[in-house]
Image: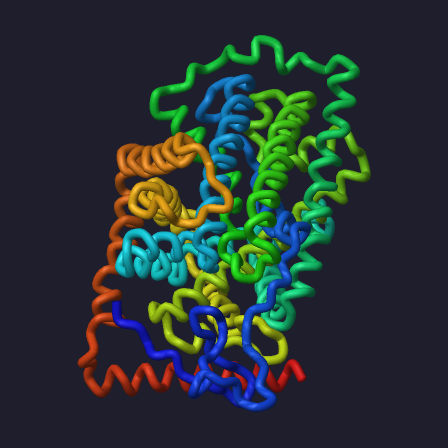
Length: 500
């Protein structure tokens, strides 16, 4: 791997490039007089860690359309079983990441673990796909749900204009980017508040559902396992939908270096969060079926809204607001975590070094946050985002499966490695097998979409040799790169002056 030298790159006196431990080495090993260490501060407490995990997992899916699981299982009972099993499998993956995060105490999540185990090429491919496609498209999709549901109460009797949705979505994205650029503490505090909003929204559904069960409204649970038989292909796809709904348990590992006492905080935050989310998801689905039949659920585009209209009367207008806040929390948590991935990849020499700069006063990786804004805006106003996510969704599970498989490899390759938290070996083995099985299944069941995603992922290989390995680049290439970096520096200077 070709690494960029760690140099004291200073932009307008406001940014310093971090080294492996997030600081610049001073000449002669001494700190210059009056200069403090420039680091990402350890501001992630247990409560903030829980809010990052829960707040990122619970987005719009559980409120809008959980019909993907039902459609592929064919019965109410089997769909509830799948929701439960997916929660347990996600817990297995999260526990595996807890061991990785407490053993390899570096931020970056999947990227860092793949780099540690499999080397620079697959790690670069992972961050390449994440930067160009996955994160901008995923942020744009959840942001569009935010825009639609924040406007829902104002367009009760008519269709919401698509342009209005995209404009309010653009504002929401910008607010999230600014928030994450200005303050780690405020971003974390708002994430805690939004997590409580998400849990309140779930309770608004669960409590009336429990009351319906007490009243004896169990007609839709009779013969719960009867109905259309699940096909051989349908059942694995149901698990795919379920695992996607639980995705987000890995984001705390993206900010490991900012977690207070990570050896205790990471495992505890993961266990608490996954228990809350799994119980909440299963009970929410149970609540839906106390009022909505399987056939009605399949026809509904927003199950939570349909449920609330039937049971909550005028209070149902509050549900779209809670869904919008839930989406905003997922946006905030995702940007907060993934910007650290780009920061670490830049620090390792896999992205432009400007992305590893830390704001001196705010202690935020401001360039790594800002780089997401134009890419997300391009995705927002481009074509079919959902198809794009389908192309690349297999890549997420491929690399997560590889990272967890790397845990097994490290057990045998480095048995003496310090492991403050250790899981039984069958947990990472079962989880990595599940991930790789879902990837193989997607290649078989939807070869066109998955094939396109596979080709997009493979473009990371020539990009690695072009941008990282190839030293003798022509002058025009270096000039063009220089102009891009100058433009980024101007943007950073404008952001800095506007924040004063």
